[in-house]
Image (cartoon, rainbow, N blue to C red; front, side):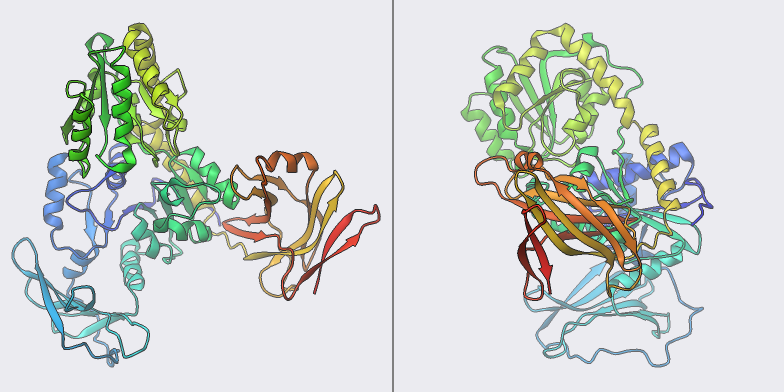
Length: 611
């Protein structure tokens, strides 16, 4: 489809589930991204929320007061929006749908008021509070504007019915699911104008994946690891919050990763579709690097929540080791969290009261990086460590463990910071000592750190988003078909390797038309560890039934892949076209298709699939 709009002429929306009293980096970045679009491009970008709260007037005031939200940037909430509507221009439904279900007698009522004391919602809940049967929502004049019912009808599957009411209490619209209601609101906001939705929240991405409009494109942002508990990026269980994005990439015009390393890991596992992009989070930087003379020698800073994933006990061990060489070493840790008491006890037990200080939360803690010699990152995993970006933006060389994801993308080792192996206390301590004992080296790296931060300053990140949105808009008409790979045979040649033959075609009947994938790769995956190896498959023939291909790994490839003891290899065919992806594990056979060995003309063994 021809591009008829530029990124600056599109309506922009930032999408998150909600903005609570306390929130982390994901929500901060959602708000800050809206601000750089407003400040640098003059685009007003509403932030959309969907949580059923009546306190968003307080939320806005708090965000204005703390500088996280500009008064010109709207924060729109689904319930607040519908609460303001009278639906006077909509005719009542003649025969509204009713759920055939009875709410149990054993229920409790839970009411919620808005900040002015008006009733906002009233819920019927199970006696133990674990189940909501019906929740009604009210305008400030006391009239009902929405009702959300989820009762159980006997042994039948749970149902849901959402009804909207006019001021007279008549039903004017009904929805059978939450995502269709949300979609109706999005359509009202789009109003048939070219639009883009940038979705930050994993919760919001679940219903946004189902939203489709001929006028809009949408992109999901991976703010964290796509693998649960930062496991093996090629075999680990997918993180639940955004698992659906990895499994169905074709539902999105764009999937944005914060680091190129994560994007490449994703591609190595799932194949490369046209909708995968890398756009860093933005971080404001100082106009000039701080004067090295103003930095306090032998002082470091950590900015992090006091949680297990930040691995602060490692940082304490690092300082304990550094103290043997630099007795007056000091590490100030800014942030709060559930492990504060445990960490304070650890500091005291190791006699580090004068060397490690838990400073708690401070709104201006980032400014401390301007007067420190180094920063420290010891996390077990990251999405993109904002503390490293903030450190570089203020000319403070970071010492960071090389974990997925972020440090490797941000730090050029020994230039704008130091990278050390994950968990290596001695290596981290050596780097801290080097910065403390070599002022000239620290000053040189300070300058390099500040200079390198330009690539994620506000303008650079805005430009990256504009480019990405432009590509997504150009590609929005992609209608690539669902594909499948049908195995024909496997040849195993003595000391020569393995070849796989088969056909990629449209999913469905074999004769449903030719499928021409953009790329088809034969992938060899070591079963227990190591990065997979992929090789393009050779096209042998195209016809209306599909595209016949051959993929080969020679013996040297197989020897390289099968490292370690008793290492087994699994084989996959990954076909991609546009936003579509097909991943097929090469089988030996099944009840319908059995693989029989037979000799080739060169007396090598072949496994042929025979129905």
